[in-house]
Length: 122
Image (cartoon, rainbow, N blue to C red):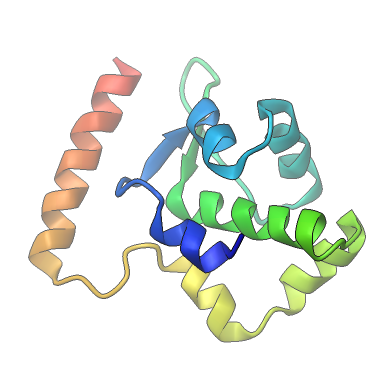
């Protein structure tokens, strides 16, 4: 499974609950929590009730971690080193989840996501 293809199939939203992320990545929630403790690049936000909210770039990073561990057979330490030394362009892509959309579309999507986040937190 290609990580770039996985990214293309991510739902078009900014925040994901742990169950959604587990289904997208194809692992159990406890695995995500373990990876969070091992890879400091994955830092989900937490609601007042301590529920994790993963950003799109966190999900993309988790897909890459899964690819490194499961397909490329890296160790945790090896995957950690690989992610730290990944080419600058790859890291920039992980940090820029919105892509090349025009600003009006970005603002409309942001408004929709903020409304969705507000409903989640209410």
